[in-house]
Image (tube, rainbow, N blue to C red; front, side):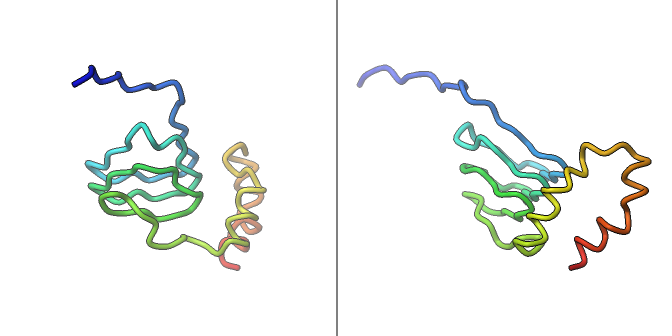
Length: 102
């Protein structure tokens, strides 16, 4: 048998804003991006990229549902709320709540 090649970590993992990763979840090098607002269930093995605001569970992790509709996700992503200062977030609170509750 030939020698195994070492794992390549030439691409970095990017974890978005407001992501929840459950206890004992494993994110393998084949996953390069976990989108904003994603939820990774406890004990899940993540082998692929995870879309924004998607809940993934299992081994291998697979999407079970989106936290919001595609339209709400698009609108949330467009706000870039994570770049806002606290006072700006407070000023735009009602607008952001309306987006999520749509």
